[in-house]
Image (cartoon, rainbow, N blue to C red; front, top):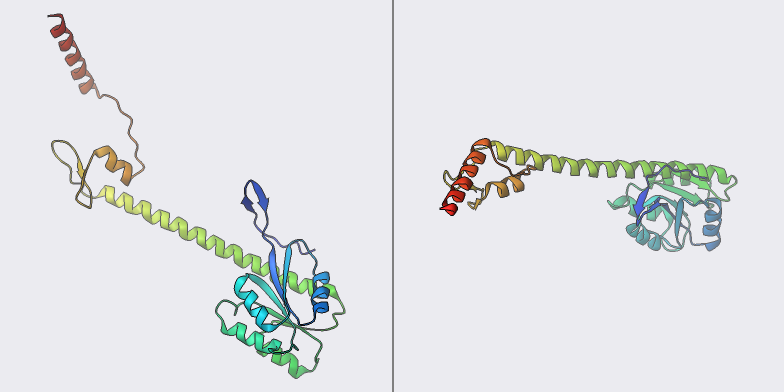
Amino acid sequence: MFNVRRSSVKLKNKTMSPKTTILAVDDRPENILSLEAMLDDPDLNIISASSGNEGLALLLQHDCALVLLDVQMPGMNGFEVAELMRASKKTREIPIIFITAISKEREHIFKGYESGAVDYICKPIQDPLVLRSKVRVFCQLHEQKRLIEQNLEELAEKNNQLEKHLAEIQTLRGILPICAVCKKIRDDKGYWNQLESYMHEHSEVRFSHGYCPECAEAAMAEIDKMKVDKDE
């Protein structure tokens, strides 16, 4: 089992863990089936292509952690696919493992590395555990990269919120044009707003209404006067 560490995504009150996707490119269906059998794991999503062109198209549609690429294919061979991947900003960082039976000669292995491969495995694969171990490492690296990118996005959002709050604080610290009679405040656009409306929009201040002692005394005096006038 891969046991790739991953964060959970909550969707409709259910906890779901995203699968790690890898791409297998081989023109022989039996080879694809063999790879799927060796790498069978519930945390792994294996997509496949039977040609280089089809593989490149899938890479533009999916976020792949790794490409398992055959070298000898009709049309575009594996070396050409790797070179095109390295020429694209979207796919140049995706690691490639060449899996091929054409030759174990050193010059072919070097050509694979020069094309951008990170590893080279010859068919038939004698020990599936070796392949699983290599794939596990790249899946874990991909998951760590995804988490770092997610954390950076969250940090950027928090920084934006902080800058917004700082701007609000700076606004409240400045000189506020206020009417000496009605106590309305003029905003940056030239509109006059009630004090409460302005504070509500530019800060987290909320008002609770009541009477200060002087106003309470004046209000009671006015009520008493109204009673006297009514009695008369």
